[in-house]
Amino acid sequence: MTITFEDTTAALELAVDVTKTKQFTQTHVKTLDDLRQKKAHPRIYGELAPKGIKHELTQLVSIADIISDNTFFSQRARFTRNPEMQNIQEDIKANGYSLTELPIMLMRLGDKFIPLEGRTRLEILIGLGMTNIIADVFEETTEANALRFAVSQNAQKKPYGEASFKDVHKAVMTLIGMNEINKKHPKFEDLVFQEVIKITTKLKPGQINQIVNDAKNAAAGEQSIISFPQGQGAKEWLLKNEYVDTRGIKYIAVGTFEDKVIRSMIRQVPDLDPTIQEVRLVIHGGTLNSNDPERDWLDRCKGFKHTFMTTLKDISKTFYDGVPIKMDRIKLYGAIPMVKSLEDKYPMKELYLFN
Image (spheres, rainbow, N blue to C red):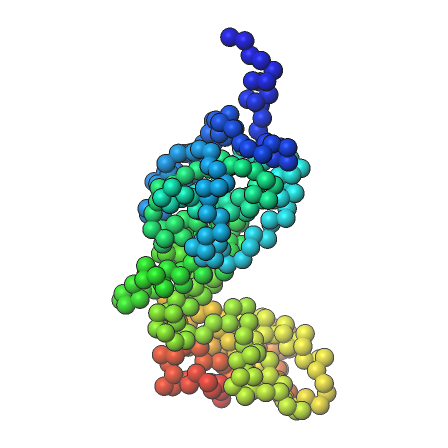
């Protein structure tokens, strides 16, 4: 058998110069298929693939047959545009379209296709004037199953803690709105938790708690649990409920970590206007544990003064021979109520005041 130079070049072509070539070929499809290890991707091609997701084949698909502006996914599967789009585009232009990566993934929809994964690359290829793409084609499935798969693929590419919280959050809220998660189920919180884990295992515990708590609010049709992720919204709560700074009083919202409260006092208080006679520290619980938000608030927020004063006593014994640390100007003032089920004792619009 004679191997021509053209055949050898094609076999070794691991990236396609899409600035010059305007269509992919069957040779490109074969190269990609030969290089790909399906067993390394069980969440796509194997037993770990989400419910209703079944890979059919890898093939060339005409751009004309792809519904790329379909609101179904462009609005639901990603909350924000891919922040790496510019870098990806520059890489494709400079180094070619890589055949060593997984292809763009499409779902069959009648005689057309809609994007499941790889929308950024699809948009770039369309912009470069490509007439077709190499695609993994999946069987048509329900809107909910396709949404789960699309968001999970976005999330799995991210490092732990950097999976797009907003995308996963939006997907779960959408699934609740579609009645894919039973709002009346006695273990609704568990259903939401399992839904998040199916999509991604790369969110931090606090992020998962916030999704579950927000899901409870959505299911109840009211804000039954308030969250202040990383303190966001705590100052606004104080202003909204008329806990406003005056000429002699300053409110500072802080979390339930004694060391951070102490550092906050050291950092902020010396720079305050000397006319401020009283600094009122107000505690918030950040994002409460979704398994038992009532107990979490009672322990960490309502019980914070006891925890904090114990820490001050330990500091006093260790560094000041037991001389009490005075808090004349700085007052541990109160805690923001965050759980509606506790409203009878701790009204949601009033601070719980420490003695």
